[in-house]
Image 1: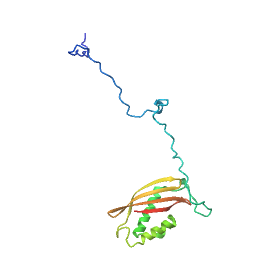
Image 2 (image 1 turned 30 degrees about the vertical axis):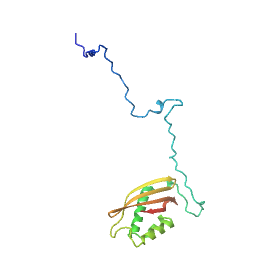
Image 3 (image 1 turned 60 degrees about the vertical axis):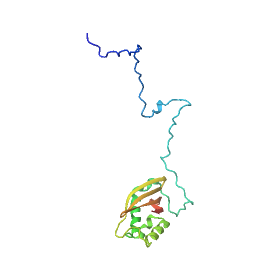
Image 4 (image 1 turned 180 degrees about the horizontal axis):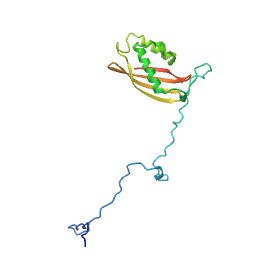
Length: 183
């Protein structure tokens, strides 16, 4: 005969039988699947609602669009907002630094934004140091409505950094800057 593999635990000196070990389940590390949730009024987990991100919100206008006005363009008919915004903001900082003529900005901007860029480029204090070409380092784009992109960017001007924000709207098949904030 062979010896038993596990010897029973010796009885404690008190004379009571030894306690059996307690088995406990390991706590769950992940939330339950939908079909594992309890039913009834005490259900604490809220059902997920579908988020309305398939179609963006419609764009609103201050006045009714006339046939001869620039026609709004939906997002699906516009180029990639991040690529276009990076090029546009690079052109803006080059204009402000004096290395690009402001006339090149006319087709990309509304009249108010173009006037703002021209006015800022003619200021006595240059936007960047002489001989230093400003460079757009990073661009973030959010699209709050169909055919609208809100853009923010970080620009390096030599040793200093600045922020730029712009609102782009799609008109006549292309993006156009309708607001610009220079930091």
